[in-house]
Length: 443
Image (cartoon, rainbow, N blue to C red):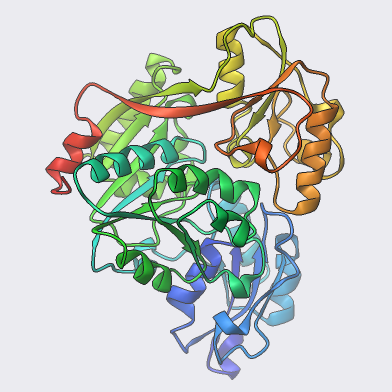
């Protein structure tokens, strides 16, 4: 092996600024037989060419660990004489994972996937994990539903959110969000706000960052029950006492075709088949059959996603711009979301934003050509937020339907009236979420 001269196995962690950092901290950092020589990054703009700082990497990495674009993986394996390429991000097809495995093998490196259990921090408190088989399946409404039931039962709840460290990594190790001003304090991107705002408004403390051992310790001080709110379709960073996994009946079959969504599907205590009100019966039945074959011990629930709007009466026939949650319609693969569904339900006429897009938003449409009728709320930087504002205000429409969970008008200036759209999860039949929480001793 390449690392035989030093006695250490050289590792490149293939990531996207989230799971990769936690895999390093929870697994590789504490094992002196490994040396992580580089991270690679994709999916998220602005991460590549940064450095994972020595303040987080530790004394064995006095210069930190460089982060490179994923496309450079072949040359990096040769440059560093890497022994392993460790795949460490989520919501990718099995085909994509194996393409990367083939690249790593072709250039002389082993391809490694860590067991999720080997990276899970153990809590002193009871833990519920909410994960999914794909981005945009409906984790957030389920997390809010669980949290609401627990709070009504008199439990103190804290939520730990999957990482989105897109700024200064040194200051993002541990982040606490208990009031809306904390979003500004931590310079949150639009994607971060999409996940944080609704929880803060519920009065529930939320924690995120990079070092999830320290984050868990902070959350434990606030709660009787800790909820892990997963990102994309990643596995939980915290060892759960109860794991809900959301399957999307509009993407039937994906529960066996995407990584690590299939892992979640097979590990679940409860599989929630969501959006059954929008799906074909055969697709719902297909997920049920796959669940019984892959995870016969799991409890199976059905749920529907109910549109909730701040207005919308009288918009029939109006030309509308549909702004949707970014990750759901980009790497999540859906071509529409809550705003578009509401527009169709109310008889409005969606306007394609593609020809109006500028700068990084125009590049987003080029990168994700399946999106044409909606505008993803991209905002990973101040410049991208400016591009988003310019694009929205250039679109020739009567009003804006905002399907992202945040108050977009508080971040950018809109030159048209807007209506806020969201989804709520509603169980169909038995068992309900409360039934499951009772069965597992949470209420």
